[in-house]
Amino acid sequence: MSISDNLKVINDRIAATCLRAGRDPASVRLVAVSKTKPAAMIDEAARAGQVLFGENYVQELAAKAAEVKECVEWHFIGGLQSNKVKYIAGLVTMIHSVDRLSLAQEIDRQWGRLGKACDVLIQINIACEATKCGASSEGVFSLVRDVAKLPNLRIKGLMTMPPFFDDPEAARPYFSELSRLAREIDSLAIPNVEMRELSMGMSGDFEVAIEEGATLVRVGSAIFGGR
Ligand SMILES: *Cc1c(COP(=O)(O)O)cnc(C)c1O
Image (cartoon, rainbow, N blue to C red; front, top):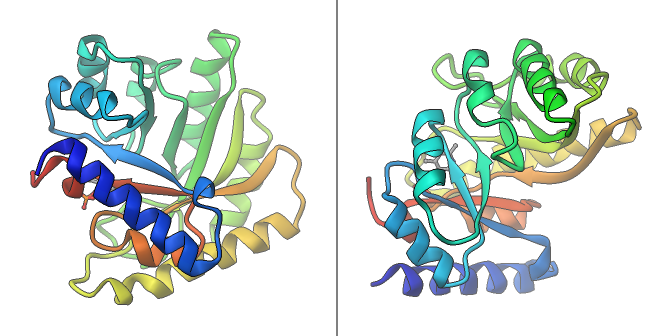
């Protein structure tokens, strides 16, 4: 199947899941995760109508953004070192992976130099696995309060990446916990904090994530093939 066929299948599945869950299909955006894939494949997806792409590695994103011909929007979704933020400043419209104050401070500094504000999601490590990045569910409240004080950054929601399961249903408790956390944070009405985006769900489990409230699903291999 071509990239265009794959995109159609994924978009149809997103729409069908929304209908089943009583949600407006326009409330879910597909982030096409193009890490390790060449610029030509991104252009092909863009010509098939895909606008939004997610990348994990700073150097790779900077190189491909210069190479891609179509007009696309980039989100940064991977682990991010503070000293590399300057290479993606102004290039991405959202960073999904803010998991510590020092990183948020550097994003604030770099976007501030451009006279712009960066939309960010706070990444939560619900599973508390030592190997995955993300703030703990307990630490998220103080992190959100501290990040919210930075002037050149706007908190738009939360992101999580559950452990890998063969059965997508096994990821459901992680997705519902992220939704619950977002509602709890929303109820605190912290200035400069919106909980309108939930970035959760990948190729294997995006339908379950949508049922639990995802607004951004990050799908890679089901569009571009295995890595
Ligand atoms: C690679 C990646 C994805 C996409 O994973 P697939 O299983 O290929 O859909 C989503 N989110 C993050 C953070 C990733 O690193």
